[in-house]
Length: 193
Image 1: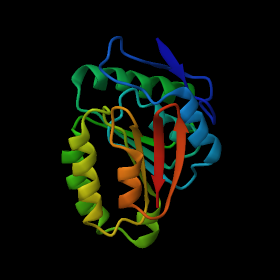
Image 2: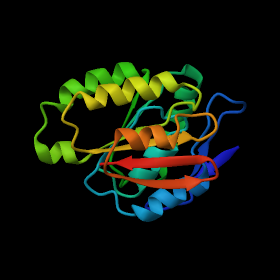
Image 3: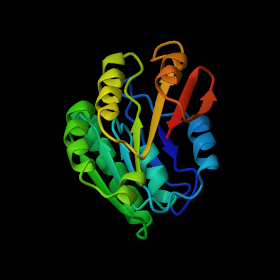
């Protein structure tokens, strides 16, 4: 099975998806909605905390993101994500930088936020953190949101969840003031500024 990059320099490039239920890629329709609203990603640094196939980060890269960091803890999925990065890089040489890190979201985020606090305001504002763990792993959502709330976060936090299995939208809306929501079925992505 494969999914495709929807727009930008790598439009139409196929990404591998592992068989079984190791990951749950963001639906094509939800990915299309958010990136149709955000066509140009120039100047942004996109961090996908639970990368899976890498589709969200590689979509941002295809649309001009300055850099993309993909964090993935599972060895089998990490190997597949690496193949997707190599495939996109070969097909579209003019893309920004991609870094692939084998780590879990919480551990990586703890380290990153120490670096984030030393950045200047312009660099801080260019950061997009995408949080999309397996929906049932509510702990990851709570720990990552808690870590982010302890710093002066000036970038954007994109949170994907599901009303049936994941952290509920109402819960997230009570935590944040300035947000925009994109939905597809019971799944949604909140963009928090």
